[in-house]
Length: 460
Image (cartoon, rainbow, N blue to C red; front, side, top):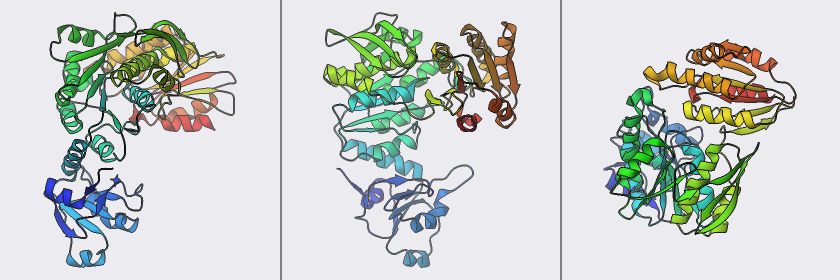
């Protein structure tokens, strides 16, 4: 394990030692005093409405051995009182975290796989980590800890790992550029270019441009892996003259393709070619998008020369992160599809298609607002309404202002059993009454809609 010390903060981040030992090692970093464990390094981060550095005494009381704080006055009395703790101040704790992560990444000569895309980043990351984990000791992004703070924290968690799998999210130009230059990936994965964040970026072409920033940190001999069935990525690959690319797909001719696909209620079978041999694979989650995720993971496995049987094993043993296509059966005999972590049109479409394949008495969709769509919001929500009807959903419950366009479009296309609510709290009673033995219910919306409350109520 390649350890960082307080001395690295002082040198790399131009930190100031207030008290303590500059030889103290830095192992686990925490930015939340509520989750902090004894021996952690507490990082006091400053946001628009808070300053985490002000809570350093809480962190010390919970067992933090090092506090990394953004310039705050610390009296000599404090440094005497906590003489057994190391306190360091820097001008900007987020910047310091990124600088430390950049340095720590430089200490490791290992495969680093970076994943971005409009939809499916987290599930693809988990699938890739499952495959890579059959032959490597993997450090991976937890949940969707994929931003300018989460990515550095993931890198700083490296210990005796022999591979790193990192998810990278973005809302605007420049964000992936920062993350990829910290991470220096050896393999870059772009799952697709859809409509997520189109309200910020203005067009799918601009979304592609923002996603391609991930390539700026790619190491010289690195590989790019793309979904060749995505129209914009397909066009980009045809025009690319710079990068070594491996593509996957189902429709367009690609290096790794799926054929003879059997989509079942709880999983899918497909055939593909690995190392010039046709094999049959099983992915334990239903939906065509998980077949795509599997193909992507196969691409990564072949780049890393992972044996064929281990690649297939990794796909078969794949487990989803929480709140993503998680199927739960409650005490009433109702199947709940908990996919409420996030939502955009592409993921809504995929989830409704998965609901349609489940064997059930009735199919019910509880759908909420998709956010960050700007001027495209009405159009995208109406398209979801059309998907609801197309997939023969029996009942639709919408929650939120923008979701009214889902309901309106579904009504226009002939659906009758529709209920609309302005907020989760208003919908709870109806939702509690909904669901009979044998029903399947999809719960999906953007994360800030707090649909976890709905799932919690339905589990009871």
